Image (cartoon, rainbow, N blue to C red; front, top):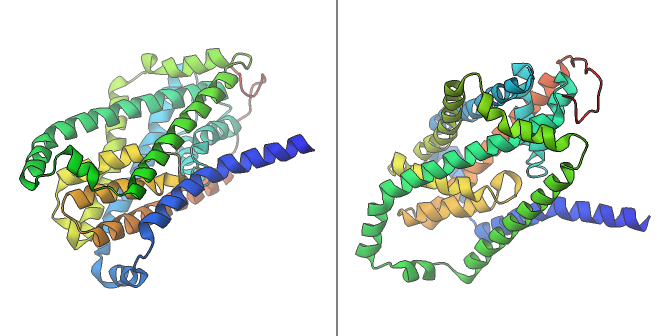
Amino acid sequence: MALDGRKIINTLWKAGLPFLLGGGILWWMYRGFDWEALKSVLARDMDWTWMALSMPFGVTAQLFRGLRWRQMLEPLGESPRRTTCVHSIFLSYASSLVVPRVGEVLRCGVLRRYEGTSFTKSIGTVVAERVVDMVLVLLIAFVVGGMQFGFFFTFFERTGMGLSALCGRFSVAGCWVAACCAVVASAFACVLVRRLALFSKMKGGLLNLWEGVCSLRRLRSPWGFGAYSLAIWLSYYLHFYLTFRCFEETASLGAMVAWVAFVVGSFAVLVPTPNGAGPWHFAVKTVLVLYGVAEAPAVMFVLVVHTLQTLLVLLLGLYGLLGLQWTRPRPVDGGDAGDRN
């Protein structure tokens, strides 16, 4: 019984830590926030037309991800239905709002349940998918950083803001936030590596996992895979960029500033908090302030945008869950549930 109690406490701690971290950052950012001003912004100042135009791109990003995932599974002899792949993606993003990163495993379980897809093979494709996404983000960061290098150099020179002066702008609390994010991200990476090591000890698990990772080498349509990948990240960007047009303070910043904020925010969400809550707010707000947006409008922007985009994720998750209720599972042809070939 004592052992069970420790397991429960350990599970609650692991599940609660991301909420504590994200909640702590949000509390620090929004302490003393003018909530009456938020009502005014939502009722009169915000252009809801641009927000409405941004939302379909949040849908297409997940839609293209589901279609790309199915394409990665085809070389492994798996042919899940497109609708099931898309519904599982919708559900995975929504579930990660409760327990960060759990959606990666959940969507593989959904395909196992409804399509009879090998769980270990699908896990391998998820790993490969994340590697591809990370390479694309790094490539985007390199290009955007190169294009904005001159701007940053000129900006720092004209304002007398060298690196030491720039660092001096951050308060002690800001440094603690950045340090906590780094520690939690490192701890999460260590836990993930340990879990993968234990997972690979399952019978046939390592072979299927590696086969899933290597699925990229046998794609039937590499150009289609590339097109889906570009469409995913272009959708993410437009989902974010169009929200700049919703607010007077950010409408004139331009597409390149949005790219910078988008890249910085993409790295911030690597910290395992629900939908990046906290780290994303802090990172994007900091970018906006460095580009001349006042503190209060910048904080307002990240609060409104992140909240509405999170609500979209929840709605898509509900849609995916309902869609799966109307999906008839395919029969599984024997074998262990995690190791069918």
